[in-house]
Image (cartoon, rainbow, N blue to C red; front, side, top):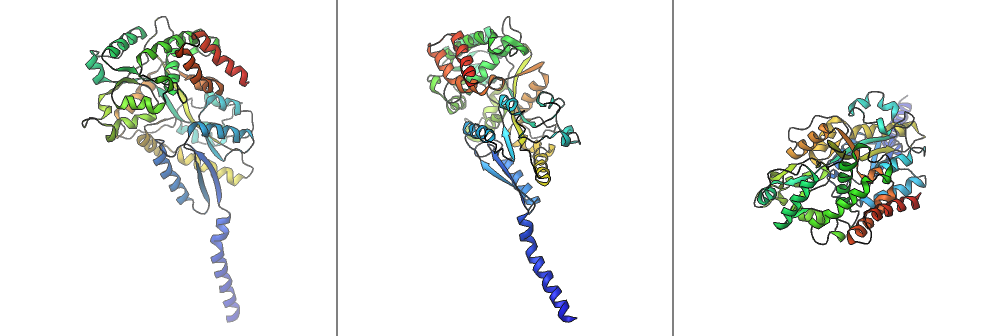
Length: 422
């Protein structure tokens, strides 16, 4: 009997020692290529969330991040990866046209059953209306963004303006006054992805064409007229804008030689950084949020340019346990409390309903107010048109401002790029 008991105890010890290793072998690994790393404003808190999730699910689920610090390179790689069939377990998509192109691929997980089981109530009403296909939600709108001017009130006061221009006619009068006073009215860039000019072009097109500006694609005459306005804006930006990138636009704004800044809400945190203060004054203390000016004869009054800054999408899984693990992680990072902390730390905006932290900065609060009060919203042009548009846009802007093409030629160049890519 004693010998038998000893053998049994020995076997128990063997299995006890072996159990962790066997359990580790069953650990579900989630591959997550992410641009929310490096200098991205969401990087610190996202890293913290992933670390917490992995700790809470140690031995069962592990999220492995593939860091992607170059946004455009990440887009290109992900597009290729999905096309070749190796869809990541979880990925971030930020191009709405690609979202539409992927809907019929059958490569993505249908999240609808999980959303209908109560999870969907965490999101702003109407979030999924435009992004479901045959009643299925495969692409989860997560990060939102609004694009509206922020202006330096100290510069405005120095020039003699006590308000932001209400119309585009008044806007260009301000530009003249700013130029005469030695300031850049706004930042433009045709280098890199021409991001700043793309946003300004979107605002102008919205002001002219209104909520239905995309109904006829680039055939809408609003886009030609908007190109003429954009070209005129280059008369009031900094020297070298045709070859400039985001660093140049941001640098001039931080140096306080540019009066108006246009970017996404993720950049707001920089306005509050001590390193960007001058003589102890935070840049945010001299900033105010404005609305898009009204265009005479236009249809865009009360409108707002926005986008789904990031969708979350998951690969379709054959293993139910892997699917459950992926959904568990997505629910974790979209938890309202976690999103509240993410918004506070990054300045970004989200489709998840959450109670803003009492520490949320004033500029972010005002951006949220602008978003809530908009009569309608439209996507920025990069989001509304195929990828070929955004790829060609910098070259088209350079040709427009450089005089190689007129406004109609600018639009034709973009149309041709789209047609050639189809």
